[in-house]
Length: 367
Image (tube, rainbow, N blue to C red; front, side, top):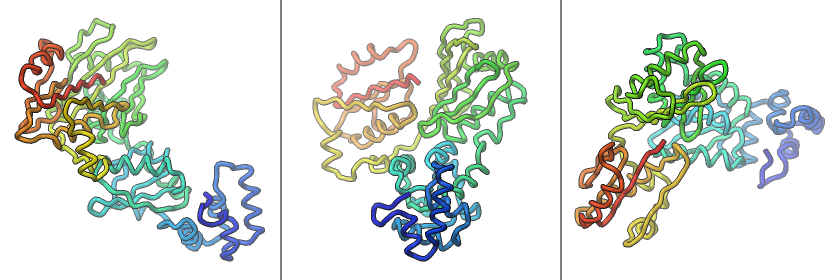
């Protein structure tokens, strides 16, 4: 973790009289066996300097706010903002929030990819990130104590109906966009897609596979005896539309459940990270005779972005029609058409083109 503004961390610590050259040589020897660790982290782990003086110096050297992060400093539920897996990958921990500003500790604020990843996730939730630096060991200890919280309420030995229900409800609680229920050689694996990343949730004993598959087919209105690919829907949860896809693999049938929350709140374009420049936004979206394509990986906010654009463009003098599968957010003033088995995209589009449209939104969630 070497600053671009000052010399290497080790030299800076010696200059400040916090450690001796012998201490730094000892740290460098240790680093040969542990090349993944930064010098500052080794100095901390070997207790070569008072940790409060060390973290204060680190913050000054890197021109960052610094803190010795402990569990008592955490005033938020971390997984409400980023998944535990995302936190581990980026060595980051949200620990306090005031209004729309959230404080996040990093083990390495010079890792731009990690910092930007977390910043964009939080920005998509309407939050502005305030960055702090702490020791990597502090981050590791906190996340280790929290690891597995995604499965706190899942008992793989519960009865089949209760187990499937708990898997779905836990995914909703964690704000997952998808649930993957996958048969493997010796067990079934459940994973959630949270903030665009797949997170392991729970392992299910192999002997429960037949019952789990049967239950999923029953509540999805699928054919029990059919093992080819099928599509279905779960309508048991009043706040969600859940689309289900099944596909046979060498170990059984895999299911993916797409969780589509009804009546989502529409975010402003600025909350999504678009430049707060009215001229730029108008030139990007408010055009005649043009096509706007929104494309991104699963769970990265395509639907959120489209609805935000349409809400921005929605005015009494503009005729906006949407053709969707399904309609996830009902917006006053729009003509929204939902596709079903009897009504296809091609038929709807042909009719809409005769309805004097100014703007047409085509949106299909294939999962």
